[in-house]
Length: 479
Ligand SMILES: Nc1nc2c(ncn2[C@@H]2O[C@H](COP(=O)(O)OP(=O)(O)OP(=O)(O)O)[C@@H](O)[C@H]2O)c(=O)[nH]1
Ligand SMILES: [Mg+2]
Image (cartoon, rainbow, N blue to C red; front, side, top):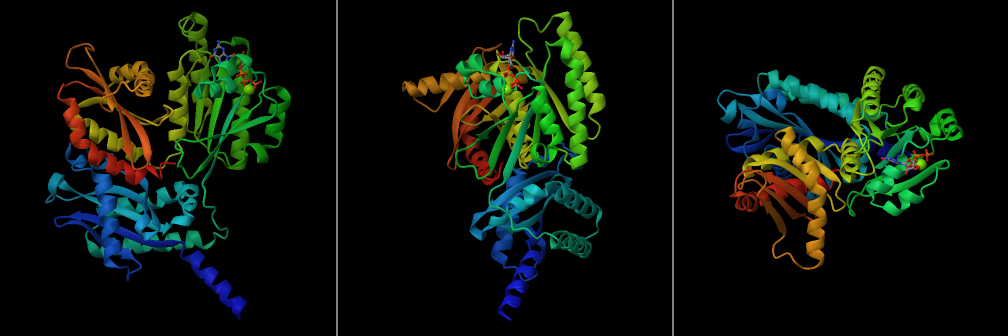
């Protein structure tokens, strides 16, 4: 009898993996929970969910700046520590001629218990499809009755989906990142370069088997990122392809490294890439793939040979990648930024909140009249970036690492009166690059801004509070 009760309890819990669903709309009176499940949810929790999701996502008036309905759709994972819940929120607009900006800010939030948070990360793709589908139906719906029906349909679909989930979730999200490529492509050097272990690069010998390290974007981060650097010599390659279930299985992100100087081995390298994709398809794994064309050294990058190799590889990768998401970067250990850009871009693919971060940066850029913005962690990894044009982006590429070094040096020798560095006299007197440390809860972050107007600093201070508090709601679930 007792055993049966236990079983029943467990069954019920699994069926109720999703604690609640809330559809919130920004009405005249403010953020309002309009449809929710379960129906007896208390008002205080409902209001908290409506306010937090809508305000984080909305900024003040992001959607009134001439963006079309379709441009506004963001996913994010948002913590609700007071309720011990965690939410997956989809933000979108419902057209409404009577509303400010001709649209009403709307969110659909799925809530689960904090301890089950890996459920969201592991099922993100599927959940995104369901939420997206429901949202686009709601955009076309006529009113409350239809909203209620659509949310109810979604609830049933989700219950059906979660009913088969038997395993309890580990509290920690485990992320597996692989570095693959031929021997001597530069995988190990790349990773040493990212961590500025330059003396190790000189000493590096070919990797035997696998070398595993842990990456931390923040010391407080709750997920565990394992970086697997796989030796590229033939025997090791054969081993990981043969035992793909051990090595390639459950991969969240792949860096594929090619030596762009080694013209003779480009075919071999592309063949390996093909084999890896075939293995991944067999495993039904579709991680984002970052292609790293390495050894793109400053002194030879304009040579005819390198230009030809680049063209060939880019074309072949494009034609061979099929359903995989790929992004190509050129890198060299002689340019730290080239490594950081590729690496950061890859890691950002792991963040369900990346679109939200970007929209926050874009909004802050507008408020501060900045041409470009970068948000870095303490190790100089880019968490998010926004730039109006490619020139601003280029300015950043060149200046960001220098600023961070300068800042740290000044700080170390106690030469900083305020918590920022300003450089002016760039192209014209009014343009400034500002590097500033910001504190978001317990997280220390760095902000680099490229501004065209000189009243910039006051603008930063004025808007920083709101910006930081919005980021605070998103950063603990960044990865
Ligand atoms: N010129 C140049 N040499 C590089 C660059 N990156 C790495 N190398 C050199 O390339 C050689 C191979 O680098 P590794 O990092 O050991 O290559 P790997 O891909 O880890 O090789 P395996 O462990 O055998 O798979 C070393 O001598 C590095 O110094 C680069 O950007 N430019
Ligand atoms: Mg190696």
